[in-house]
Length: 425
Ligand code: TTP
Ligand code: MG
Ligand code: MG
Image (cartoon, rainbow, N blue to C red; front, side, top):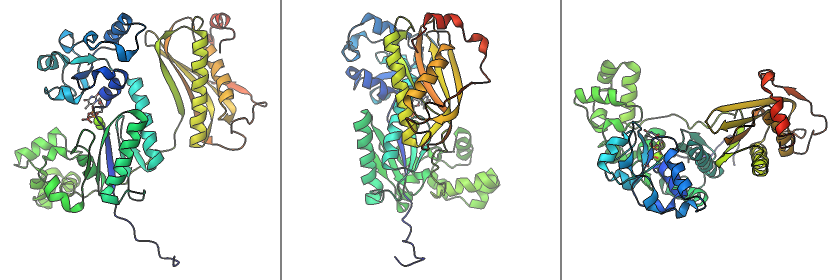
């Protein structure tokens, strides 16, 4: 290549990816017998679910008969729906609707409680699949991301469809979940496009599609136009994005102020230069697990020990893969009554070694009350720094010194718990 001459920049192709009926789809992985049925997620924490599991103890989750699941019509309370399967949406049921109202629309829909831990786990998993294929990804919440397709192989082919298909398939293979993707010249248009072919669809928007695909949509579809702005626009006789685009920029500025007015005008013309911002350096890396049933430090000692070791190994693997070592090692417990407690210790030298993390995390656990049952265990490594030869797995084990975390209240390092579980952790 000639010096000083760089290849021409490719046209920007930005994708917005959004998982389909996310919470509900994760639940259907657990209960595949509910596929295709109207299912809503919401309401009281797992009480109904626990009753269901107890009544069918010993049976794999996928074999619990459909007839045994709680129905919407049996629900009384003020809970709201977080999401609904597409089969339930056909009855007019959807996010943020009260469960009692939804019960009137679709009394026989199956009602499942929320399990955020599980959704977060799948959220991490699908995002990891994406970054392995297309590294410039912006996290926009539990079930959606922006991805810069511009320089990724396949990102320009068929307007981005080829890469979008690969990502959809890879996510499905890794998780069993479907998503919808919009690919466009920028984030603003990509966000609208990801809704065009839901569920499990791909929509491609080119600059010349503005008039046909974007202008007929209501203004509310612009990400950033909320109900208030939409109402003000409607009062001015502006319902569609096309009508907004037909307004004089100066007039919009008069009506909505300099910055908001100009932004509305640019949005209507599909203009948006915002970059895809990849995640900033992580502050900490952690892994946690919620047990199938609440566990006790003594009675479930063997199972817990194995889970704990696995968590430490996973954190160490994450650290090495991402190129970090950390000086702060912490543990988190959630007791059966949902109280959450943490303890941490700061090391003199950073580590990414699973056995080292396990030992230090074990000491942290000993400072917690282990006489009660708990439902969740987590391990966290913080104060991250780049992984070096001395912090890599296997290094620096002999000269470690442990400083107790100054924030820790020493008086609750209950000796009685240590006496009960002298060698567990
Ligand atoms: P969404 O992506 O808005 O919805 P969805 O994934 O359920 O369905 P779609 O196929 O239309 O994308 O939200 C993602 C998750 O966020 C959703 O599964 C549940 C949760 N959520 C709430 O808890 N409350 C809400 O009001 C909304 C909209 C979502
Ligand atoms: Mg979604
Ligand atoms: Mg979403």
